[in-house]
Length: 115
Image 1 (cartoon, rainbow, N blue to C red):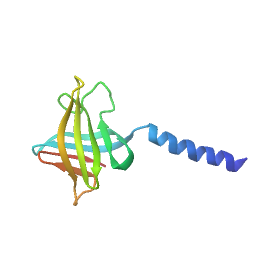
Image 2 (tube, helix red, strand yellow; image 1 turned 90 degrees about the vertical axis):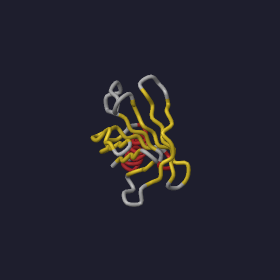
Image 3 (cartoon, rainbow, N blue to C red; image 1 turned 90 degrees about the horizontal axis):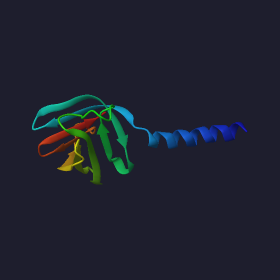
Image 4 (cartoon, one colour; image 1 turned 45 degrees about the vertical axis):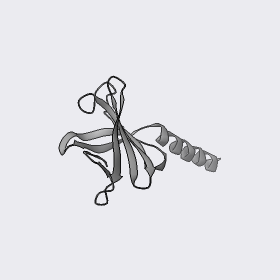
């Protein structure tokens, strides 16, 4: 009986961790200007892809950007998009994972870090 309970707890824990976002320290830079720095809601996906947003779903990360998503397209390369308050999914472009700081992804005019 005890083994069944432990197994159920492990399965539920693994399942719930994929359903809930986690807290992370996030930084978003645009053209060298820090647009956002602070704790954010971090939601990981398969293959290293992730999305970040403010804890308050009605509050933007900065400007009109409600969330930023990075989709890994191949090892060390991702496609970044920002979702605006108006529901526009704007393409920011390609980003490469930083060799100096693997928590960061660097594009031509932006940088996203989530720790």
